[in-house]
Image (cartoon, rainbow, N blue to C red; front, side, top):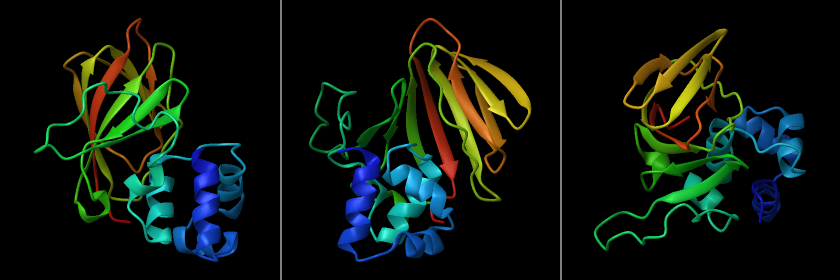
Length: 185
């Protein structure tokens, strides 16, 4: 099931109109409609707002989506919290590295971008911050109107309320640890 179909089904199950969801999330009706009609996937920020408005955990929104567990062949150890993985687009994916994320103060995420892949532009709420550490590969971070190149072991801390996106500029899969705050919206 794709994210748009899942959002639509969850919204309908709660007898919520698209207008009501837009009011609760602050997301434009047109954007929500595009997400539900699978014209766009939306951003992680929009997914967090949608999950909160629907009264579910973000990880529940991603559960059972195609590719949701395609990034790890090993099962977590019994004492390790299970993480949720999802495909952001055909060349980029996120793995949320914590459970019950909406009750946390930070959101740790592993970003994986295939060569030539990129994320959509995100813009978080005012006062949002983000830290990234490149574990493998090389990426370009487009932040506002500036492009910053980061390679393995490079890190950056930035104001996530500015428009930003990531692009893999190298020949190998890039893996980036990202921690954003705040999580609750």
